Length: 392
Image (cartoon, rainbow, N blue to C red; front, top):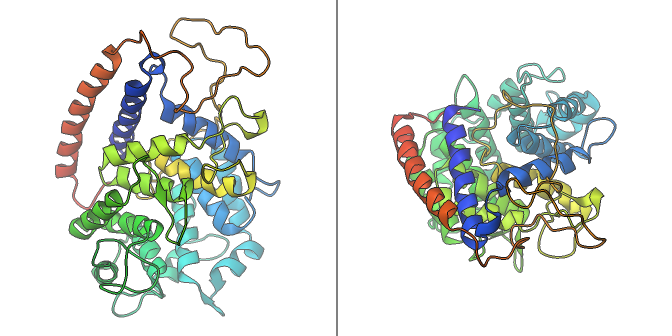
């Protein structure tokens, strides 16, 4: 994790803690984002198959993003990369030199390899970097909006960098409202949360400040009152997948208040300590009944938001094998031993449910957190001014 990313994660964690402290001052001593990330990472790692994969290659790549963001489950990350590097898995997903490589899939696997510490120039016998660069047209365009977004992101993270033409092409695909969509561009489109999040990550990684600011402005403009984001189809609910992606890039872009609201929404979808033990830590897709199938992708994509380590700054260097899970046994207050639980009374870890009564809680911690946020804001502003293309 870079110093810049570390400060971003700290700022978002402080903001989430401040939100929790304002609502529930008696329970604010715990870090809801850190505990939520620990629980989500442990549950996600437990969904890995014996071969190290998480079903299909795309979901496995997202699981790598989530575990790396959580700095946890390094052994599971390595096993997932081993699964992806199997030619029998890799070739059908990204294509081959003979059949042609698929740009979005190649870029996504390259990002997983970058994040997990693999070799992008020899992964399953494929030079992913060369394969992806070979798909760039003379005008800097890759085949499709999603391909452009992922390609700019991963190549900007690469030592060789991304071409100015590719960045300019991504900027040209921006809708007039500041967002991005999957097909049409300019005046013929309106923004979509997921595509705008991916595009923002690419723009930030490439150091494109104006277009990324417009994209982040659009994301903030469509954020729900509860902090959630909806997918781009009619009737779509606010959900963990879109909100997690948005939270991660908002954190990457220094929009810490909006990121903290999004994290609080996602944590509200987490299966807490009152859930069946097998479900604890999972992030449900939406506010409906828990469904473990969609929860795998939801939890993976939520983790880059909860941790504040979005796609721009994913880095395995400080990952550990630890997977502590949710803290369901800790004391209610610092120094207090937990009371014995009776059947059916185990408290929920969800941030929207108070374990202790609000009345009588001290407001000293929220005030201190507010002061701390001011200090962090000054530090981050200085870091932002000193960062050129963006530390990754």
